[in-house]
Length: 266
Image (cartoon, rainbow, N blue to C red; front, side):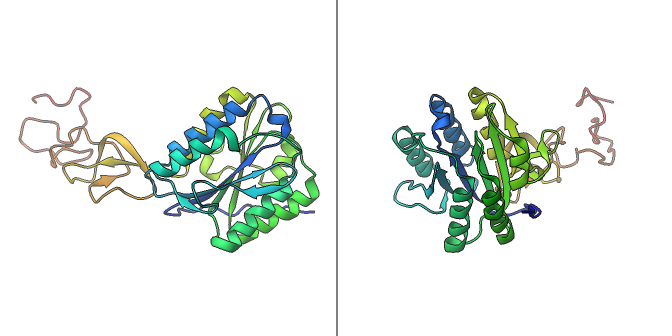
């Protein structure tokens, strides 16, 4: 069976994603790390406009009911709270590992509620490969990009590549990679935090309207307002005559931000 190419993610806004969680028995003893990682992942998406759904799989797969729904929901503070309330008793590893069943459930959810932009698929184990390739090919052909996150020592990298693609992060940027590996379950929270923000954009406030921003970023699908830009190059965001490359004025300051000790008198 030949894997089909992973479709590009593009720049969807809002992002629609499916988080697929391996709930097989081999994770027993590490479930707290997974729960913490999922909570951190969801927290990173609150307020970004992202819509997500969760699918869990062992020998079979099923959609996870969060709050009162088991499909796509916007990631709000209420959704974050519902996920945190679900995980302690709802995510309980047992059974085998069936990637094909998980991808079949992704396909069905796409068919029922509209196609997801991205699947983030967490797994720690091996799976029968041929059915998984067939099922993942069907999801890719719907237009959904697949990112596999292999965790632990038992991950078979060629199998991961067969259902996603050949590009690993790092060195490939997460937004264009097909898979990532994390050897230690204790670090899965770090990996999922990175994933929660990798497919969004950093925006910076442009208070003086000169096209250059400053300060801390806001990570979002789309600009939070008209006074936001995607750079933080302004050395004085209170003065519209001061920005990189600005013409010099006889005002006693380095208008072009070229002086590392700016602002100083000439």
